[in-house]
Length: 316
Image (tube, rainbow, N blue to C red):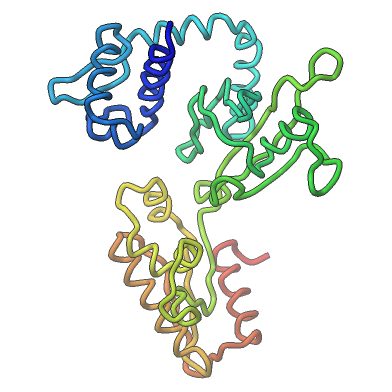
């Protein structure tokens, strides 16, 4: 095969790599944009892939992955008898922890999710087996870099299991353990991943004299970090189909309290603003506004804390 043939094969494979979770069906224009190739090149290569059943073309002109890839994937899967041992253990670990359990290996300087067992509860952090990620600062990557590539980590010799939170995704955390084979060679990473926030387990909150929008401090500045720490902003855009929606609505201990005394004026306004936003989303917190003598002070928070704990948990 000449050099032109090699380039054509590489381009065809790159087009297959454009299909990802959430992008299972792509137009010719989208494929050209994602690959960086000219439309005519994409059209010619996709026709070849379609003839070989690596892709299919729907009636609307969109392309999707074809059955030939499933066949090859099954052949690849059958070559890994390791799955017969690993997968049941991942399922057991996921069932016991109610989180997602994964088996990662080094592949081409990246981390490859080879096997996966998803958590059974409604909130889960999903990755498909076969997904690759760069070697970042996550616990999984640190294990691969240290024991697989002999890299020295900034904190020296790590204690296991390694734990990181928010390394790749601000909402998830991971525990990771090295798995060694013959001659103590790293063969994989066993990982447990899940959400940092679990309203399915912690179904309530007590918020006292809260400030729920960030503009008081940032004067109109907004980035992703500020946005995610400004409930009035992100709850205003909270989608009706979000997996947390039903959990928030069912929370039986969602309490917001504020006084009307000294230094509480701005906080009272913020509390009522968030209440109205939540009500518009069919989420109904208990909002308890105390008297005009109740100031923004630890003296009152201690009283409120005891009062609401007894309300929700009962007297000791």
